[in-house]
Length: 585
Ligand SMILES: [Zn+2]
Image 1: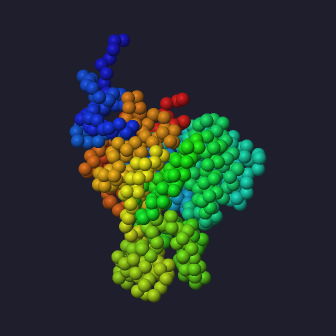
Image 2: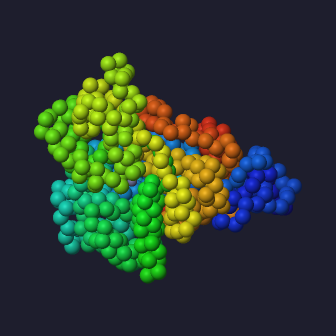
Image 3: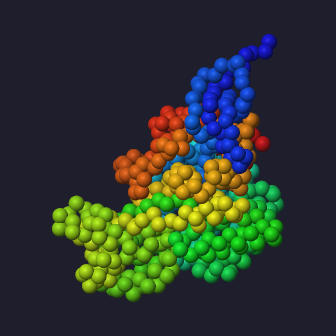
């Protein structure tokens, strides 16, 4: 056969390429063929099926989101929105130790119940939206491979699922160490999962008073697991010299937490993603301290990355759905159970007394969490009152101001208002209040800082963290001018991809997977820009909050356009990346 005239699938013409490697932006055309970037720069007489005029636009690698909980949602929403709306083309599933495999058939329902609380995913949506055709991790990965996907995915071993599978729920929940046979079995199953293409394992270890508890308010099994059971899994990665560990550890004793994380990195000899480093509004030591520690880790040969919290998603919540005060035992007691049970508990004088008594302690313990969820409850503003005329007077007022005017404790104000409004009274975090120069310092000065945290798919009735990518570009790059565009795309794609083991993604180079964004920097916007709109687009008639994006002209995954001017094209070119790649290795 003679040489065929080369024909490209997509020609992106006239754009400014920011390729994710941090080299200065350059004007160049880019051609895509068979899901890969075929050519950057130069000219060709070959034709293309589609030409995108990118004059005046940025052409950049798709974003890589390391901290998501789309495990359930990807089964009814292949594009993992809202992340998909915001230029994310690859996600990591199974974060924080939570997931749906390995799971025995008789534990499916219970594992969904767990997710209703720890990640606040509606039960009916999971029940109707998930088709359980797996038990083991290899079967689960096969299932993930089969379903249509609009983004690429890699998957952690969810350690809570593994422990429950091997030890049984009761023993795992009791916080007992695994015995030798159980340890061997967990190691064997992790090996089996890694053989099938997992990217590593994940753990949330937040102690007895975990902010992300089980559905009954008890800690998740990983919250109270012992060091040795984690190190047992770390040895598997060390033996294989592959894989990545995501860990959210905060047991209350910072010294022992740090000592353990260092030990974990030393035993695994693999990269660790430490969750979460987020700046406070005023005290720079809140982010400088952990980043200094991470520098020290690297000096000692320990590869630790910081999963930073860079987004400024607003919180608007009702006490019917809220779970992010779960680190407080008194709040946890009052806000678990059915809606009716919650109402009864909020009326109970003893429980109310406990809440008030614990308020100061809860403030202290929740300080770090509250920094991300709207600050002290006194600063929350009443945003909606269940359309009840008799409560209208409270709209727009802060909980603290109402407390003062009525001579009540601010916790009582929240409870009384909620009860009067059938738990549909909505509280709003006061302002974005984030400190741009602290964010810039993290992103410019630490080589190990990765932006996030979307928590995509989780807490969807009050949180829209999936917009963090657009927020980063519009806020820190365009409006504040404190992070360069080159640095932004390196952090949002290349560094994240490298840390998590994506092999051929995160940068634009010839031969790489064609995950490409074409966007207009001036038009880029989050819609609505503070609190998400309520949309009833979940299975089971459930709703969530949604922030869409404006300004992304094309979002391209493996060479196919998934979104064009904010509209989904219905294409599902996403792939399961076993061992970090769509190619067999
Ligand atoms: Zn998480």
